Length: 624
Image (tube, rainbow, N blue to C red):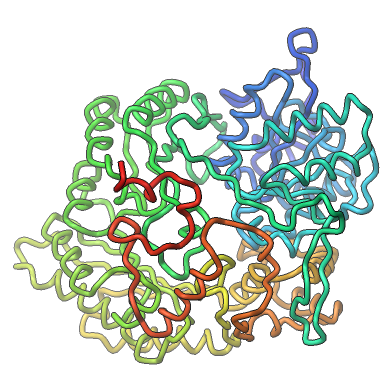
């Protein structure tokens, strides 16, 4: 019987001790040495609290895939909450894996998924509590190989000094090759340095220590190149082209406590056809690739049986674009509706088809409907290539209200490129027009009072998007933008039916630095962490002054990364990564944005983005 890493006394003194004991249903145990011949111990880390990390599908997929190998034991690690963090530091308890309860400093690999920029100090927390040197250059032969992956790894440079290697792309492709190489090097007794050198030759693997960067006097990048002649100059994104045969967890782990997404998740497709110019996911996950209906039916049945969950969520970007959506929803209702399994449908476009699908799975008197126009005016929606007209939005709202919905959530961005005061005011105007559609219904046919919630976040330019050249704004400007919307909402005829919320401006600026930062930003992250920065994505722990002090102390100018529009010929920190979508295409889209010209979606017309190089998905649909 395994021994828990934490004593009963400690477990009883911290919030939600079930975060740290493991042993959940469907977790994988391979501690019987007589039964397994484990060559690789892999600690899969999510640098946030258990409830957030347990809701992440990517970890579930890789956890299942790795553990199918007889010679690999993959275990899970999440960031200890503030209370346990303090105790572990005081008592010098090394960070441990949930399954074995053993210190992860003794593992072969520590894999950190980088889902959002504001988790970067938690990355250092994981390494620090594990008692592993924070910098790759300081690690010795017995230390684990620290690997990063996920969407933020598409610009790995702000974290580059802390990682031994990064995996660029979708994890189902070359991890087996990496593991096989590691076992080979281990048997040959090759050094850590020799393994990393060989690993850098595997497609999709980036080893920061084997590349060097030089800068112009103005701070922009002069050059970025490998230090060894046999190391590739570019790193190619790894893509799964046959989604139906790709690994998928048949027995997802069932937590003891409620987590953020406490349900079975069914990924129906990967990628997006829409081409919104602000959206990184829509570009880096191209081309759109669907799982077959039969494949999804099998996954759904197996996961629900293995977990006993009472809800299943369909996951993808723009789920309405899945060609078999109606057939899938019909199957799920017919097969599991009598078992009281609820179906969750995020990311749907608001049109008659989507509303028909939603009406089959939602109690319309209790649910709210979500629209994401992203911009208030038609001009701005054309700038961002949203592909929504005001007519479509109002028609969708009208259909929804007649169908019984009376609660609407509207999501917008502020601070977009080319945005004007009138564009911001139009956010309030659009909300009012939607309310008017509701109150245009005869009173006796309405479902109570209309409730419209308007939420705005501040735009952050991301790598591999047409807006990666865009500048941001000073914090006082962002607050002024929100004030404009708030004032205009109060002036609307139906203002009592409209509630307005907005995002923090200071968090936005720091996210912008991390998103497009270079290796110099690592010093800022370390300085802030050493002075107490942790759980920066959590409002109760966010401290902007601490970050301002870190920039001042390191002598790094924050404005250089936020307020500057990039030159079209500038070398970006992420330019060495090939994602299929070309920089030429992104630049053309940047020009089209400035002219408010709409680009058709991938099913309407191929725009030559470059993703055809993968020879699959939506790029070849019309030719089949």
